[in-house]
Amino acid sequence: MNFTPPERPSLPKRRKLLWLAFWFQFLATPVLVVAVPPTIRHLSGLRLPMVLDVGLYLGSLVAGATVSGFLLARLMNEDATGFVRQGIGYSFAFTLLHLMVAFVLMTLLV
Image (cartoon, one colour):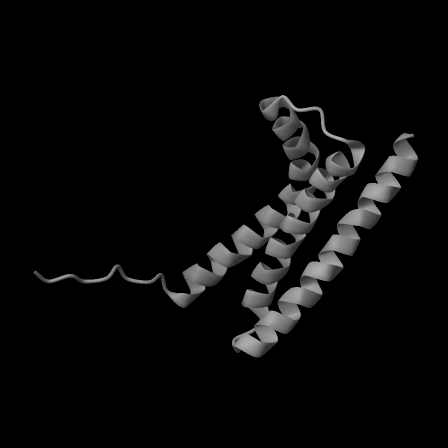
């Protein structure tokens, strides 16, 4: 039985897919932060304490920013050490950026 592994996409196609995934994740994070926690509360039917409720929002934001950061680091780096270091840095920066945007929007809307 001959098994041939599927071909990997060429490098330009792969980079294009990574850029598309990065921008989708980066721009979708604020939408998901607003949409996911109420959906989880509604589907579970639980009344959560405020601490856990805030944790759902922050957890969604940090998760989205972390994925965005590591996707961008993968696009910018070839070696593993730089990838991890830059991934952590970008993740932290994106988390702060999303938190600042959320703070500004909350102060303008209230």
